[in-house]
Length: 183
Image (tube, rainbow, N blue to C red):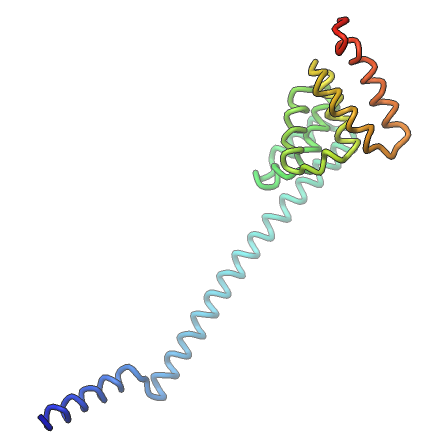
């Protein structure tokens, strides 16, 4: 029995030496860990750089579309906005500007659709009097007088401008006969 314990003890010590690295083994493990860390950092850095370039490209496209819209080139702006990547194209600013461009072209159906998407994407638009006025106007042109009236009245509540209430009230006055069933 004594020999078996000694034999078991030697096996355990041998196993322990295999599991526990010596100075050279520890250095090899350390160097391997450092090399793997450097490779992972380099790969992640490369991915981040590509993502940054992608973001910059989309931002430049968005700014180009915005500039076109501001200068009255609505069709071109819509084309540029449609080239944005889905994550960028579905942002509330791009949706709102796309709606504005369609509305300026008197294409009220897509304008209203994009306004709804912009509102869904950014609910605070429901407190923006200009957004509410524009959406109400598009709905008016589509013949959705009830919803148009709701948006126009809401725009009056948030208005801090002198011209906006005049325009909203003019549209509400045009809707009034429809609300009374006179037309």
